[in-house]
Amino acid sequence: MSKRDPTDHALAAIAKKVGPGPIAAIRFKWTVRREGHNQYYVDETIGENSVPVVSGPLTGDAAMKFVDDRESEARQRFEDLKNEMAGRTAAANLVRKDAGEI
Image (cartoon, rainbow, N blue to C red; front, side, top):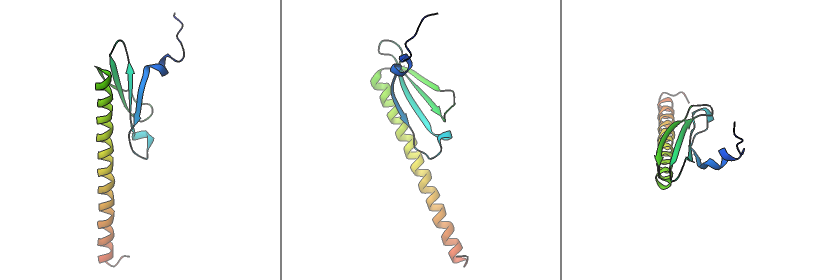
């Protein structure tokens, strides 16, 4: 059994990004880690205790671009969902107002 430095795991994580959203249980998280010479992997999880989906090996630049692209897509989907919900709320309010409920 070899002794490992307790900071090995922390040093292996090169970058982390967390997606948007108010609920941690459904929030995406991406972690870039290095595993060898110029080999990087991206761990993508949903919530706190999920098993990661691993992408790689990638170059460092490709791994960072992958994370940036995924985070941007998640942010756009989140904004689209917020806008859709706001639009439905506004439409429902108009229907209620027209029906004399307000």
